[in-house]
Image 1 (cartoon, one colour):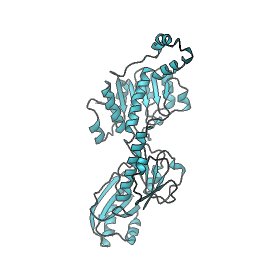
Image 2: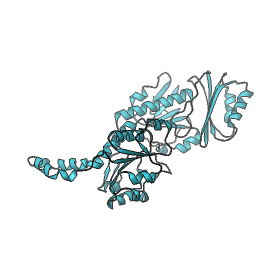
Image 3: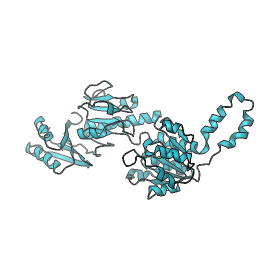
Image 4: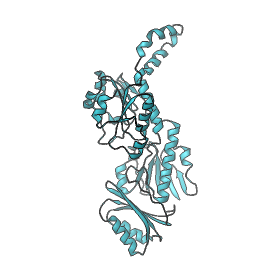
Length: 392
């Protein structure tokens, strides 16, 4: 029986995938095998030693202490693409409200409630104050071509925009899905110089923090509009407020309000609605649950943020799963121990990611506890699991 602790309200469409014969799921399980989380801050709690995996029902994972999880052999999953359509739709809406001053017009119209008889004439006289340009024919720069960025780029092409994309680390899957009409920017600076609109779709990291700052704003067209539904820290807040006040930039639409941004009249602050659709919550929950089940039952890793993607079709009844530091001769030491115990290896796979490696080893015989103890005692081994076709 696998024990799953939920840290937030998770969509029933995801939770219903857990077989009650195999899984115990609750919010108050003392020694869980895995944690299923949305927004709860796991930095603020002690993660039990029993935890083998954490699945975040969403793309971002800054609420999870990934580094300490890695050092303990806890696999952290996210759900890239699960909320992609929701964010894509909001990005398109953000470009429209940044252009047409729709919000200003709506708020002004609401102020006419006590002048109902005069409203039609006032509307005709004042509507020109809220006009703005169309998207068609304008140039959109998409920074980050993951699941969301690709969808935004393709839909912008369909709207008649000229689209430029920049992502030096674009995946093969993303490249296959990207419209051939999307132009490739060789440099970020080249994209910024051409774009009327810029939309950000990349994770926040040490290398992307403050990616757009005063230096980058100087390269951009006067009046350019920036959309940021990814992470607030991607943009230097003080610099963008200064650029807006100097009328270098036209509008900044962000999903991450702060007191300073709310006080800036040329900023449109959305209350973090990027993934706030029932469909996105369902999709992310289903994806997170399936990834946890695959890992717990067969050791398969997909969409992990700290360990390599790894899958091996299981032919044998017995399976050994080993997480270790990515140092020489680890596989050799593991297989030597198994051979010494007379355990025949049927198949194996070893993948690494930066300083960590992951092994799936199928064996003809069950692995005795004493053998597992010998393997875990090897210097560099972090965690060892033995499973038998879905049972630990």
